[in-house]
Length: 434
Image (tube, rainbow, N blue to C red; front, side, top):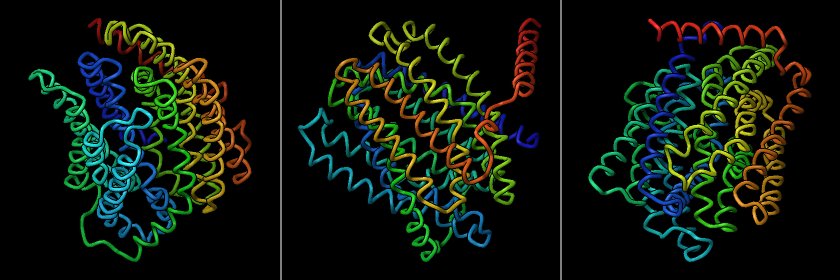
C-alpha cells in the first residue's frame, strides 16, 4: 500500500485542517452560546442531518456496488450531482413538514430555524453523492479540497458573526447550511465529479438498488443519532449541548482512520472478490493500529484542554469523550467491512447488523439516560457500535473465508507501526530543536 502514501498524507492534512477549524468554530459557539443554546442549534442541525441520512435512499451505497461494472462508471459520475439535488430537495420538504407536525413537542426548535437548516439538505445530498464518486475515481485531492474549503467558509462566517456581534443560534445554523454550497462548488469546479446530462434510466436503477440497502443505512444513521433525540427528549437541551460537544471532540479520534479508509477505497474494487478480501483484511489491521493510537491521544488531549477552551460549563465533556472514543474508533476501523460486504450484493449482510445495533442502542439509551443522563447515553452508544462491528466481522468471515483473528494486527505489524511512530516523533522533536 505504499502507493497510497501521497493521497493519505494529503487527505490527513485536509482532515486535520478541517478538524482544527471545526474545533475553533465549536469554541466560538460555546463561548457565545450557553449549553442550552448549543443544544437548540445542534437539534436543528440534527433534523437536517436526519433528512440527509434518512432521505439519501442509500444511493452512495448503490454507486459503490455498481462501480465494479466499468460500463456504468461514466453515467454514475454524471448522475451524482443532479440526483443529489433532486433527492435532497424531496428530503428537505419532508423534514420541514415533520417539523411542523412536531412543533411544541420534545423540545423541538422553532420552524424557521428548521427551514434554515433544511435549506442545506439538497446541496448536502449533492456533496454526499459527489464525494463518493470522487473517492471511487481515486481523486482524493479534490475531496480533500472540498472538505477543507467548506470548513474554512463555515469557520470564517462564525468568526465574522462573532466579531460583529451577530452570532446567534440562527446565524450558526445558516453558516452550517451554507458550507455545503461551498463544498459542492469545489467538487464540481475541480473535476471531482462531471457535470453533464444525466442518464435517467441508470439514475432510476441506482435509486432502486439503493433502496435494497436503505433499511441498513437508515438504521446506521439512527444508530449514530438516535441517542441525541432520546437525550433531548429525556434530559433536555443542556445535556444535549454537553453531549454533542463530546461527540464532536471524540470524533477527532477517527481522523487518521477515516482518511486511510477513504484513500484505500478504490483498492477494494480493483481486484477479484477473493483478492479484495485479503486487501480488506490488510487495511483493517493497519486501521486498528491507527485507531488505538488515535484513541489514547484523543482522550489525553481532551482531558487537558476542554475546560480551558470551553469553560467550566462544559467540564463534564472529558468524561463523556472517554466513554465514546472506543466505540467511535471501532466504528471507523470497520468501514472497509461495509465496503466489502456491498460486493456481495446481498442486502441482508448490510442491513441486519445495522438494524440489530440500532435496537441495542435504543434499548440501552432508554434504560440508561433516566439514571445516568449523558454518561448513560455515551455508554449505550459504545456498546451498540461494538455489536455492529461484531456482526459485520462475522459476515465478512463467512463470506470471505478469512477468520476474525486475521483482522487483528500481528506482533510484528504492531512493532513496525510503533517503530515508525517513534521515528516520526524523533524527527519532529529534532526539527523543533533545530
